[in-house]
Length: 331
Image (cartoon, rainbow, N blue to C red; front, side):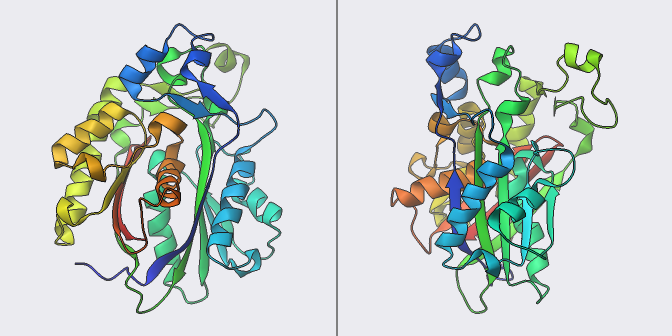
């Protein structure tokens, strides 16, 4: 097994979802859909939606507070904040800056990064590299999005999928500890950047009357291609990371893939022969919360006493970019 990363441990973990529950029946009053249609095609039963005055940073702050509390440290002990989001509070400054201020932390570096739904794996790799520098002792990695703010509520193919939420982990160096990050694998391919995107709002298509009229500030998705590539790339990355660590699926206690669509998750499970009792699913309760979905799922099953300390977790994500990644963690 590759033990090169095991000194980087997840010292604390926290997740937060908004209070408001939006059920499939609620959605059927907004667009032409039904509970049966949504469940059959996505596996989602309900999702959480932030209040109108809530921003991505508000969700992230609560998740961060829970992770810091779980780590049994104080906010002032954090040396660096890294935030993965595709729905920032604003284009600039970075949403991490708002989180830093709300946590009451001063004079530490903070930045955002964009890897969409693969943000957890990308964030683990970035955090690991930063922790190789002895000046950083506790890194706060947050993944959070208010996806409802970039969802077209007139498009039934996308509005049934996305939800709001945030997850956070505190990562630290603990030499000699047998828990922590075992390995991380990340990749990307910009050739397919058009199959999942928010076309307007950047420098290519700045906001205008036309972009607003054409609803270009919301998700555009080629569902068939997303499905095909998600299964392919996540499946390949999971196989590769297991092989390079001399592990098989039998050695893994829990499999937590990005909670995007139950059909994608089932296809990956069939491809890797993942036993149903090892697959962890919260999609039905929380919908697709982008990069935070893996942290939210681990947190949920940990609270239910299904995931225990010392167990091996295989995670995988896939998102716009295209980006993908896998990670093996001993919690």
